[in-house]
Image 1 (tube, rainbow, N blue to C red):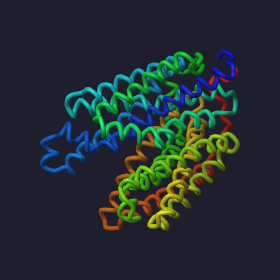
Image 2: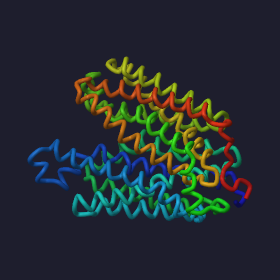
Image 3: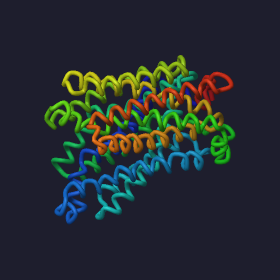
Image 4: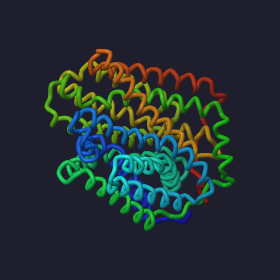
Length: 409
């Protein structure tokens, strides 16, 4: 990789984080615009029953997550020999196409198709961007590189999603998605202008990427992610009704609670990147322990306004602190297939998203109350902690230190 000036290095890292910002927008904006989407695309159903129409519109979220689960390992395998900057440009182009299609498609089915196309590129982008960021920062900085890319996503949750949601409510949901597509176009241009060429892994091939699935360790780590991370999603999926029905605050307070949680997520990502590079095992086990404690605190104190805000910040911080460590852990157990390791993390994380929301909803349906979802999250996070400890103990030796792809090339 060419030698970069300090200014060029930080411009390239900003461009990669801007892509994470766009991913945060495209993934989470739909959650705040479902009523508008349902009213526009499902007018007859909405006239009969607004809640049923909104629930149907929620399939847009599920479809995007399905695209992530399918696309992440598939693209990782098919692009094993593609230079990393070229891969990033192609993935950003796919985001532009999918998001524009979602914004202009005339029917609900075609909008969902656009969301699926967008989701295909999600996991591969995070993996490729994290690898490129690590190369830019130099050897021993994979956790920091991934944290920088993820900081864009957490930043989207702090202020990007509320702003685009407000735009969609005022001007229409299609305008909101056109704005998101504009962010991806800007990111594509920034990547072309600032990110240096980075070659693919030496000897990389679809067979080598897929061979990583032969390792039981890969499946164990993916299980840790899917189970442990679902605890966080069981909480965050029901923050809105907890705020209004348990704490007794107005619906106007919900964006502020989400913003505070987003601030915690940003703080967690940035500190977690440094921690992962210093001690991977301690970051994973300690991170899951932090998630267990903070979710338990949320379940106990969320009925009080101050407790709600404090616990929301801490849950977000703990959940994202572990993100760089988990990513680094998965890549360390897929030597020669780092992009697949990153992709598996994204697929497992989206399974956690769906499972956490579903299990939390089941607790609510059983009459446990909205905080019942938090206690389910507590149990899931505790299970993830146990699985992580067992997986590390079963390893033949400590997880190897990870050097970025082509460090020094």
